[in-house]
Length: 170
Image (cartoon, rainbow, N blue to C red; front, side, top):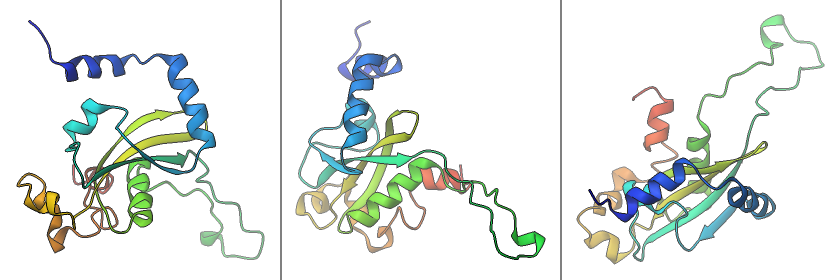
C-alpha cells in the first residue's frame, strides 16, 4: 500500500542522518537562543500539532541548557533543613522552552512544540506560535479558539500539552 509524504518524513526522523544533524546542532549552538525559522524542520510533527503554512503562524527554534539543577551549597549559617542543595526539576525541558518563548514573543500564543535534537549541553525545540490578532486566525474555525481571552498566556499558565504532562494531568 502506498504511503503519503508525511509517513516517509516521520520514518526518516526515526533514524536521522547523524552527521547532518551534528553539523546543524553545531550551527544552532553558536546562534541565538531564539531563532525564528521560515519552515519547520520536522514538517510532519508540526502539522500533527496544528501548524499551517499561513500568516499568523511562526516557528521558533529554542535552545535550552541541560543539567545544572543542583544548587551550590550555602556557605553561611543555616539550620539543617535549609542547607540541602538537591532540588529536582519540576517542569520538563519542553515546558521550559515554551514558557521562555512565550515571554520573548509577548504578542503570540504558544500552540505546541517538539524536540528537534539534543547534544551534550543543550536541548533544541521548535515552538509553534500563533498570532491571535490576525484576521486569518480569527476566521479559521480550526484555530480560532486560541483568540479567546481565556486562552491568553497558555504556556505561562501551564495549559500547553507538555505543561499539563509535567503537572501530572496526563
